[in-house]
Image 1 (cartoon, rainbow, N blue to C red):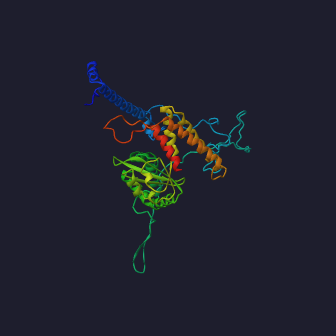
Image 2: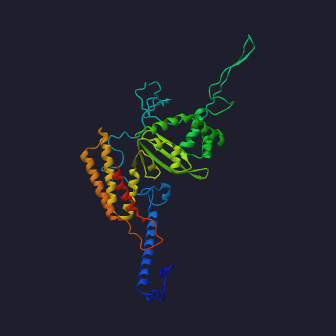
Image 3: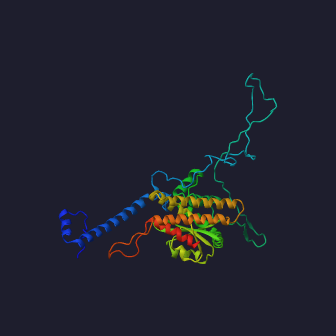
Length: 411
């Protein structure tokens, strides 16, 4: 029997009657086919709605993709403290300086009441105020002169040696070149804007070639420092790994990072996955704990792994917003409470939490995972459909619940 399910759901009453006349099996096949199509459409609608509902707060979507929508609600939990500066906080008030570069005295010439001259009267006290400002900004030009002397004995011309780095007749100094690189690669100004800034402030006209040459020289100088940072990261007990897309020569490349509390190693590659990680040459020999977002390429290495809770909190926020499941919000609270307990223990000089506290957090974690799994059971397999292959897709909340459960088993 041919498939009675219409390609177009707009069926006339006569077409429906024709299928009905074919008997019970034809009606059952029609209903099953329609149910499959409805299930597929519902899944597609849900996926599109989920995509629309994601932002930088509840997913890995970058903030630049949020558009002009209202600012997402902060993940910070409400504190009992009042807003503003806290008692005992040092603050950032402009402080009085004990060392001054110039003193300007404002004399009292006459009495403001009777007009008598006070020029010969001794000063009793001073009332002082300070203004902190920039000195006039201008380039300082240093002329280097190497002596040339003729030896009276052999008539050889002897020339003095210029300092290292003074190679041209006229050139920019190291401080100015450092400032070029700072604006280019730290403040991330475009080269044209950097050239404009130097022209406006210092009165010097820079070409893009000069900017890029300064950057290249800085890169070469810092190469030993980069190697040393790599060694420090490779020897660390815990590192955080991540990657993000970036534009290089108009194409998509990937910026990979591995960081500790004190060091960050950057590595740029055309690929995101294993090829890049092998070229980076850090994880293949790493023996500590790698904290990451669960990207599958990281799991191929034999070091210990930990998943980043910042990603978990965003995923849980998405489930709370999109599906109104309370276990997700309670799990977020639990993770934040656990972090606070760890921070408090560190402040008190402890290296671990008490065994009872760890047990309580583990039991609460398991209860919330079970609640999430019970609410989000695996999708039923498709009805008799030869076109459907592989295991059925899970909804996001089921996927996250399973991931947290497997993470608990690995810990």
